[in-house]
Length: 278
Image 1 (cartoon, helix red, strand yellow):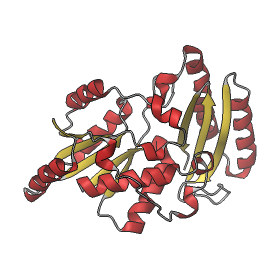
Image 2: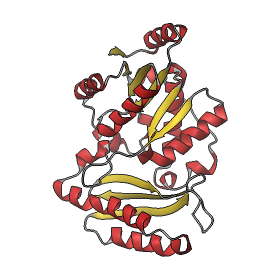
Image 3: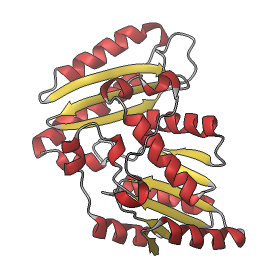
Image 4: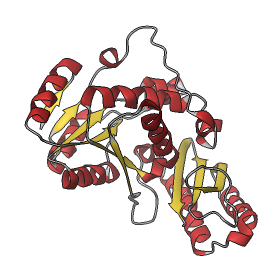
């Protein structure tokens, strides 16, 4: 695996590869890799000649400086995992390589920026689009792979690709889960043993809603789901919503593609999860 830390060197290397007609698949990460990330690498390997992964803890998408500070950065372990997974190229830049002083970014994303996650993490998606645009611009991948767990983020990135007419195909890959159902996440490392047990209420409730889904009783399902989560010790629900998978507007009887999305704090750790229903 080739490792690059500067834009100039990786762009030169990738230009040579493109001149040879080789296709590239890209997986953007903030490190602290787990099997969910590696599943994206595997899909990218199936679809492309070469796989690029980035590891960059992006400061502009953190609302809380303390959250940024405590975000795990096990770069040696991550590098080893990527090598074992067959990743071809790692881009691991410093913040100074990605951002100039006093840099300003604002993309008119519309209402999708302010729904659900946007309500609880204002400005988050501006930071996401800022860094993903930079990465797309530097690496110019043919295809980029993102995990379904960050469902709204994929919709936001798709909106950015549309608005800026970027020549990249986006692929959403399924959520990978632990054996007990917990969605894999870099943040799971912060869960205590007790938190870990309580966190299972999220996936259990999502699956219950999926198994019992009835488009005539959406409000009742949402209320029961919220009650189940709120009565779990150590869990503080931020939202549980059944929405249209194309708009994130509340689902109704005629919605064809329904997604159930949840966000909650388990102990001190904020977790998100979702299931596709239709």
